Length: 303
Image 1 (cartoon, rainbow, N blue to C red):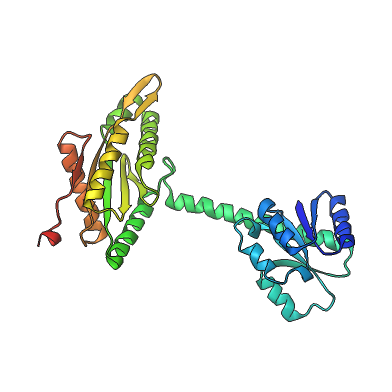
Image 2 (cartoon, rainbow, N blue to C red):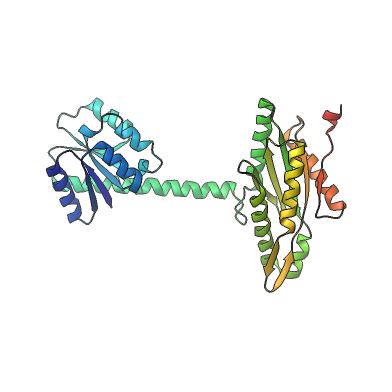
């Protein structure tokens, strides 16, 4: 493990370092709280052994609020007069464990290694949580939001647009002749096409836009703060970007195009907005594919 030892006494730092290094741990010695914070931010050690006298002026808060330093488990070197209230307060500030001076070498090793193991388990839980989240919300082939998640996001954006009177547009994107690709070259070729279209669409969307896979060869793009005029320009760029995409598969050059139907939000529920965009998509496909079609004004707007 990597351990930073923060203590104003050089003698104490040297002793702690000697004991920890004797059992195979790497140690770094610092004398001030500022140096300890800087080291944790830069190197994210597994454990920080910190003298209680250095924890004034928000040191623990600074460590636990930092995007990198918060991972470091803190073992606090406490005075013999540590009381119950002080211990509870320190734990609530993020301390992992205590060593009450004077302490034995064996106790030092045990506390530091226990803190390091706990830190490792916590990080493993975070990784597992992220994996589960990706399974729930992510399409495994394209890495995009899956159908459930992108439709949930659509509902949230419609609510926000209604609440704050903001523009919103959506686009349903369908890969042209995708079944033919699968039938002629196999599903592996189809997967390559899906990945290429995903990359092309992502490359043309803004950072605030969202893209998800509805299923099969269909995608849904959400464009917050884009009115009808802005959406028409942006979505034509999406079509053109894909039209310039060529997929090389086993010596074959596969030309890829998409048809896109889009709709600007006019106050209707999310499912009605999506239906209008989907209807526009069918207009684009009936019109010859590799084209964009915008939905007409809703009945609500025409009235």
